[in-house]
View (tube, rainbow, N blue to C red):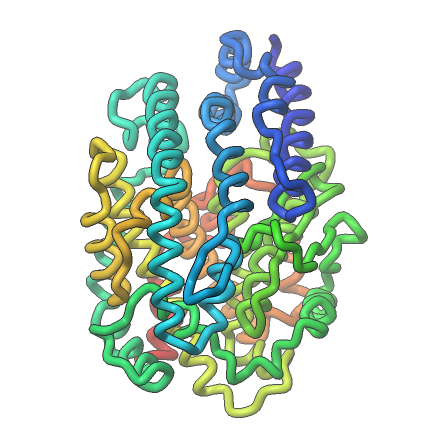
Length: 483
């Protein structure tokens, strides 16, 4: 197999897998057929394909070849997880609640006793049904990556393949947690007392969705206005939200639809799906804008761009565009311009506390995952609960220790995206003022950056605007609101 053959087969594979992922994740198909697709493209798993990936001289193609081996080894487990999640039903206080709907119920339920009961059942049921699958998946991930990454330590092997210094990022996260602890504790305490009438020490993970629900402002974030507002906003930037029909919005409610929104490219740049299962209020807007950043990014890459620029590379970049968009929905100026709100202080405060919670949560997740992937995976619950609880000041259940782990250190991609988005936003404000988000000149620059795909990593995208990656811009923005 030549590098050219590899790329041609890779293109067809991603189209088939992307379509299957969309149909299953959107609830349009009850049983995913990931293994069948990997079988159809079994030649991409052969030694000749690995040699062709090395011969290409493109680091992201080699990383992709390793990911393919991991994906093939774990496809059956992923199918079983999706099937279990689709079929599982929770029994709580005489009610039957589909497992996939539990996050929506937790976010929209004011009854704290019911929330806690639901979250306990969700955690324990999930641990029984999924923890074994997740442990096996991590095991396969370790085995394949260590072998192909040339190191017995999974963390080092993955860092080498992905070209990300995970240890340095972990150290930066530890500094971030230390530097923002006082600010976060005070702000969370104010919100918890006002919203729930509780001190910080009594918060549990069951409280998080409702704590940050911001339901008092639902009238300003109606479902009917969601897509029209997005189209208006993009038009103000000189862009088209649907990219002349290349982006498809799927926001219908379906019982088997995944609760976690996602964007999936099926043909880059011509067929990209944005999938959202509505929950209500501002959360839907922020989530939609996040996925819109992904969708517009994939749909902006020229069809003539090489395979690795359209499909592969550092996902910190596409996550950076997603965060660039979703952070606008927590910006005071943006909220005042695009929503019928007055007196924004309380809402902006709540959204900023939520943002700092998420940033600290992911910083803690990375530290936990660095520990987890060097453990024997035997009893990770206490470590997980301690790290997440210490960082968020919200008591996390031990049962989620293996469920709350994304493959291949994807937490690192999110964290680098926070760094990249903060850098971009700082530069755009300097060049185009605080309302850059409605300036067509800024839209032109963003579109140019999007059109580059992500063959270059997040560091290169920061350098393109004369900056280096750092948490400082994101933290300083939060300090201005919360201090």
